[in-house]
Image (cartoon, rainbow, N blue to C red; front, side, top):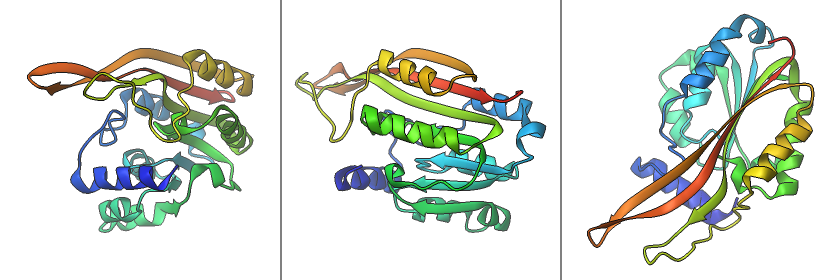
Amino acid sequence: MSENMKKYYNELFMNKKDNTEKIFEDVSNDFKKNINQNFEKLIQDKYALDLGYGYGNYTIFLAEKGYNVDAIDIVKPYWLKNRIKNNETLKKNINIYSSDIRNIVLKKKYSIVVAKDVLHYLKIDELQEILYKIKKNTAKRSIIYIVMFADIKRRDRDGNIKLIENEANLSEHNVVEIINKIFTKCVILTNIENYREKEKYNNKYKYYFEAKRISFVIKRGCL
């Protein structure tokens, strides 16, 4: 991710201004349900990974559950550190790393991996590479939670297509095909929904962001 994107996200956190990715949104009920249902089996390994932790909601949720969480992002660690500074348990359970997720070296076996609203910035070969890393570094019993956009259309106020630096804009077909190819012998729960956002300009509402929002819950082992 470029310096421009890093600056963009740091400004969002500083101003607490949300965007299309709903970066301040609470942990999804679907994710909570899957973690809670399989808690006894997953907690045995105790390690979790949050790729692109953003504001830290998923990282904090998992740390509160007792997981030792590796949280990786290029944004300033200040925002997450500030949220946990008065909680000794969270500080003990959360390891924060400032890094581009494309450069990560994973050495643990994680029972939970979260990659929410970050993978759509990768090109196809980069996406495949990081997914293989995730597969290699997950425990025999594990859950991988992925949320990403596909078929993205961004428009400026004049209705012209707007491109975001380094955003690969993968198709729905590309994303689903890659996930199913890599995570063989896994239970894959897929949810695809149309996603649109609009803003008011000159007293008229116009859609400025349209995409497919794809969620995967990938279960490995006897879960």
